[in-house]
Length: 193
Image (tube, rainbow, N blue to C red; front, side):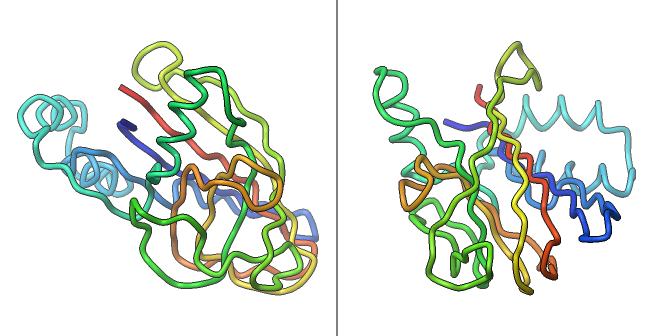
């Protein structure tokens, strides 16, 4: 089971300006940690103390929020452990509203790079193993997706195919308005414990 899942975004405007949005979507199986994530943004208390407290004494307070390794993603993980299946490194985005749920199999109004709804052209990302807490405990995919038309991106995810495929990870976030030739540099992280 995934311990934490998050998406970092940087918008790259057509004129070259960069707008770092940082972490736009986050989930941790411990809700105290989700609360701590919000606190980190406003630096309200010494987080190293709360991190230890939440992990040790409140692990039973677990429920999902807006970013998840969805159920289909679990099937991808077990297939990869058996030496079959395809790596989920294909990035898609959507323009619709909604809150991510474990049973989701698609993005909310998945859109092509030209913002046409209903398409499933995915941008191939680059994967790596990262160390978040213990050595190589985090699967990371990075990639940049460039819009060829105007639209507002509200959710994104990773798939195991360049078109169609099985959804592995999904997150929804506040809309990011894009014009033609604007891009989003995505960093998807899925930490295991």
